[in-house]
Image (cartoon, rainbow, N blue to C red):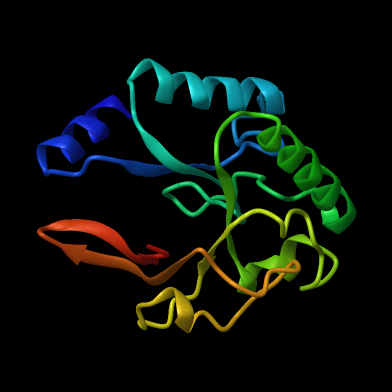
Length: 173
């Protein structure tokens, strides 16, 4: 994290957002995840110890996989178990002094929760993944979980700029 922040500063970026993929089950190695509070504390400590001025922190709620494509067991607890765990995460992030939001993809929501309408924290800002190639937060059309507007939109996944892999996003000013 420190190296990324140093590189961002060198490029003239003065503040950033950060997001975390929570460990929500058992890791592929068979090791159980750390508690929610420990994961959040360690994430916040990395930000604080490196004096990174974050605007928002984002809890990434989506199924994940390893670089080889193997499932990381994220959000694999069934719809009821996933909802309970997501609500615990949302309560824990709200208890911090940081501005948090949810990063999520409407196309993946029903694979994790009982329905597209399952609301685990729509009072928080949404960073919506909608890989349609159209920039602009106001162009977000796919919502879930009680959200009807987005704070940010990821509109292009896995693009290359300046020789590096990036995703393209629009944020509310």
